[in-house]
Image 1 (cartoon, rainbow, N blue to C red):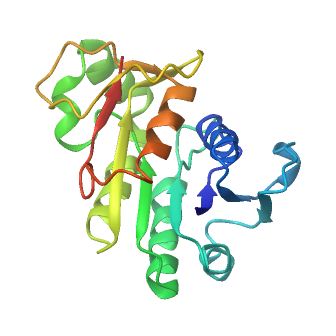
Image 2: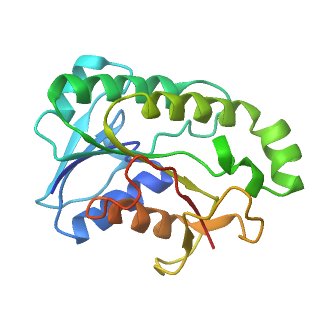
Amino acid sequence: MKLVIFGSTGTIGREVVEQALQQKHTVTAFTRNPSKLDLKNPNLRIFQGDVLDLPAVEQAVQGQDAVICTLGSGQKLTGTVRSEGTRKIVKAMKTRGVQRFICQTTIGTGDSWGSLNFYWKYIMFGLVLRNVLADHEIQEQDVRQSGLDWTIVRPGAFVEGDRTGNYRHGFPGTDKTSKLKISRADVADFILKQLVDDSYLHQTPSLSY
């Protein structure tokens, strides 16, 4: 399958790129800084561009079978690159006729808020990551209203660890039994599984151990 991955040099994006290549997909890694992606593979194309530059995004999306968005904001806890970038991606996909869109946000958005414990509700998302959560909320709204064949993936906090394939997904927002954490490798594993499984089409599965 031909994929373009936005946010390809982030901690999740890089995992998605590496696993997609292992699965023999043809990957376009969209990045502002190609030097951050020191991978060599005949099925990898590195596309240098800014996700806020619509013509560049349209060019990268052209001819793809699916689009994966793992946009982050680096070390910054403010800004709107996730929502603004996703808006550009959605517009480009509609212009270029690409339908399948998998977008990674976070557990805590929308109806998954009830899965959070006190620490995540009132310390992390209440104070430290308040702006990050707000940006994800806007991002999700744009994806939901896109008219595309979308899946929004809501992982818990990222931790180090191998790809296990052994994690919980799709649990309701009233569930308080998850560990609210998952390895980056397992997040990538779940994202790529959505390419061949429509069980979560137009849904927002949470993801955690």
